Image (cartoon, rainbow, N blue to C red):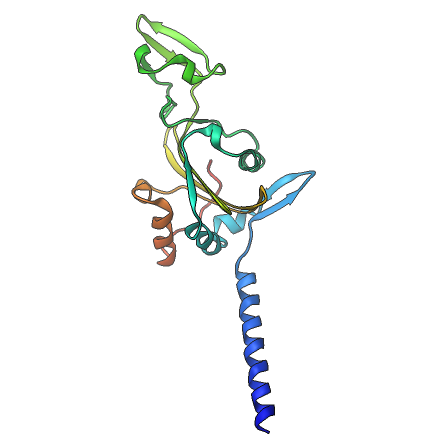
Length: 215
């Protein structure tokens, strides 16, 4: 009788653990669908309503990162995913390069930059002696890119009428993106470590849902 009772307790405990693991799997929704023919597709509701944020944050926080400060150092598999999601190349200036942060292209002194650093794809027009107007500056500028063992974080800002900050988080394995989340945080979140600040707000249920993707 005692042995049967012990077996019953063990079975109940095992079943409870399996049920808890199953619930964890269900709660960890992925926003990514991938096929070799169509590339990456994002389940927008998962990202916009932050349904996958808890799981992807846990992976980011426990990961170890290398910090990259050049767009050329962003791996191809990350760029390929962005191209599919954004429906085109996400043109980013490097942190030390000029970019169009406002509604109009910047006018700067020739001495403010080295023309070779801008790249051959950009077109320079002389506005006056000693000054130039850039007609091809990117509308976005890289802040930093973090490459971890299983996650990656892209931080950048965009210009125009109303500038924005952008955080893109990727979870990957063997150069294949398994999960994705993005957000446009206010400047206060970008102070210090934005990932840590986002987690604090998310834990307090203070992180609002998004209406649309904003790259």
